[in-house]
Structures are given as structure tokens and as C-alpha cells.
Image (cartoon, rainbow, N blue to C red; front, side, top):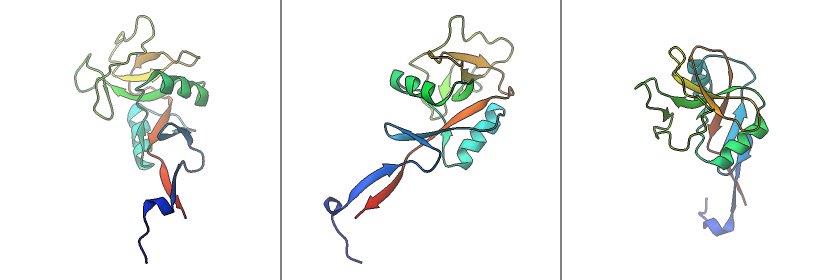
Length: 143
């Protein structure tokens, strides 16, 4: 086959069926509920990971795809009180609800409350909640 330059093609990033696109990522909310570990495994099995909330815009977007409490890719399991996203970045932009995180009894995983402000709460990782997975888009090359 002949190699053509990129200018001969339009590269379109798309999200597969059921996934919603926002900026440069694809998102899906789980149908089932489970623990934080089960949620993370499900996302990884889909070639994704639990969602990382790294901008106010993404926080707002998430409120459009869920009205329920959902797990985020945020935990302080490694070191109590040091919250890290699943991509290894420390928590800098904070959306904790008032009085949170309160570590109300071994609460090492974070979820968002339902409601428009989508504020965060720490919760026991074994609590059964829905979750949101995030992954890079699929690229399709249109000749």
C-alpha cells in the first residue's frame, strides 16, 4: 500500500456506542453498582479507568451524564489524607462538599453527590455505587 500524508485524510476521534464525548475523552456511566475496586476493574476491562475530574468544565459535564452518586477515580488508600487520582496526579482542584472529606470510618474512596454542583464525598470503598469510566477516543481515519 501507498503511504499518504496526513493531509490526505481527516482523522476523526469518535466514541464507541454508548460512550459520551467531552473534549478529548469518552465517558460512560455503569448500568450496575459495585464497590470502588469492582468499578475500577470494570473500567479497566473496557480499556478505560475511573474518571479523573481535573477541571470545572469536566465537573459540569459529568452532571449531564449522571444524576446519581457515582464513584470517581480518587482514593487515599495508599496514604490516609493524601488523595490521589487513578492516573497518579494529586488532588489539586477540590470539589469536596462542606465538611468533607470527613473519613467517617475508613472512607478511602471518593464519589460525587447527585445534584448540579456534583460535590465530592469520601465513602467506604466497599459501598455499592454506580461509576463513570473515562478513556481516550477511538480514532477513525476518513479517506
